[in-house]
Image (tube, rainbow, N blue to C red; front, side, top):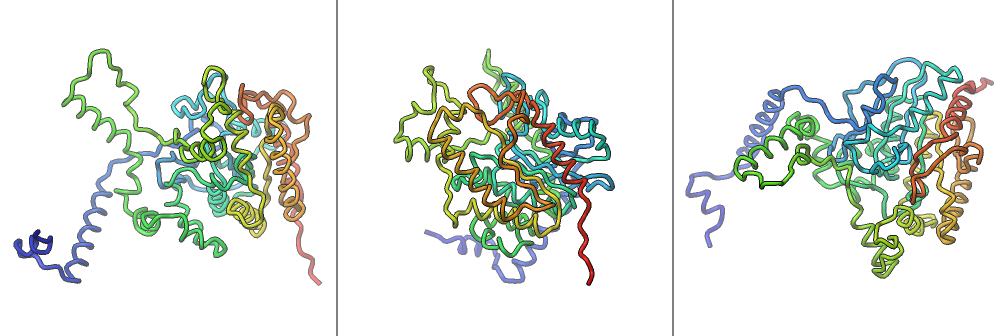
Length: 418
């Protein structure tokens, strides 16, 4: 069998170190020029339509976008700058809404918006919120966003701790595109440098060092809908639409919001349930969120040397070292969780672990809220057959607003000179 080298020799080509460098330089030049030729295009930023006209800037890109954060959004000047980092527990879902239907996310309300309204009612008016909400946000992504929020000089960070994932080592991140941005962020903290070798792929390091500087790659996600539409038109031109087939829903590329936790589902059903799905479905064989979460909370690991604990501790350490103010609160859960005795005991253990950390990290700048007062949850309505998502926020927004106002109204303590 003839080798590739033999085929190249027939063409008169002989690779040399200088020749390879020259090819690389020409490739870089053409990629750079191609980026300059790109027309204007804007990224799709989730929750933009939920905050129209409000002093709130959504920053997290679609899960399919390796940029992770919209870096074109400049930090605001003046006023109280809040960085709100959260997951779907901060979405107030319209009854009947699908959790991962991004196309209809504008029909829902947001807990940060409700909290902003409450802050205005108590005369806290000069406020801007950087909104770091991603559906299915996990602890590792929360750490990265905390670092980014500190880089953008937030005055106070509001960070949600999800009880079903805060100590879950099987689900510390969701989606690989996050690592392209995380590689740059983690490099600033020597304590997590070992993550750089364990989690990102070489392509993520390449993106962080080179790819993000080339518009042809960095701005590509903004043109995904156009490319998808062009491919769809070409496909229809070659293969005519079958009568009765509706392809209108294919007019937009998948956003990545519907990422499935297939590995987690497999682990739970095969390792813990021995393939018995009856504990996850109702009598109609329909999957029930509440039943799924009650299995997830069983995976919480409270040993001292786990990756989930390391991520949480690094998040707290970085906030503490920054001198910034922060509120970390454990997302409330439905009282229906009590129906599963094992799940409820796990939830109580999670609260105990966080209370231990509260003793170490809480001070006049950092507040770790483990128990939300019962009266603060008056009027709160959870989605049916769900233990954490909300249909009505009740008094939770008022409680968070008062907590923010109380923490930010405290005068800075200056070090006394001898």
